Image: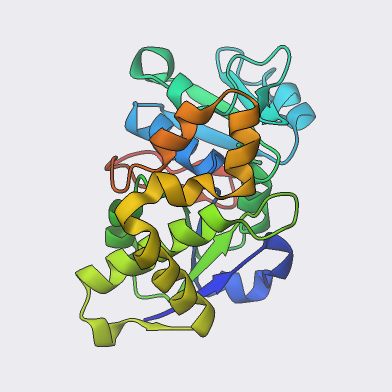
Length: 242
Ligand code: MLT
């Protein structure tokens, strides 16, 4: 099984994805929020590339929760922002979530042709690696980045999944590109104090400026949640739990 890493959605090759399992990372915060929402019992998340499309779809899902951010903050008129701490069981259990964020949900759209598609984060690195190893296809770790720049936190999330793959499978069973190995080494360097490592990221500085540093603490909890976030690319929605 071979693992490669793509730093930005604009670098991804849709044809290559058709053959592969793809994991999208937007560790601060969209894919961490997806992980938290599914762990809290959300029934389904549907992904939109922009807030207007999410708003329009609410007509089909009048009881759904409209969630998303602009500049880290909740969009006016939406039910929830993109803070994982808002996605508590009493808020999201059994709910359909319509989600639009600046980078994360756009990255999900960019990966929609994948043979199998997942949302990964530090929170569910082990659970995601276990799910990936159940399938035969090679793996692409796709970082969402921040405003078309590679993001430290996404590289660390990808490195965490690489690390779990290596822990779970025989080391010789996991081949990787140099970029994927670079993420793995970066993760190993950061793992002892993930909060401090994440705090160096531009995305973290943006959150601190918005008064949302508690989100960084939550998103840095390595393997803190057991949820696998699998997405049906053709539906742009999470796959129902078995
Ligand atoms: C995004 O999707 O751009 C991010 O998750 C931004 C954020 O932290 O809300």
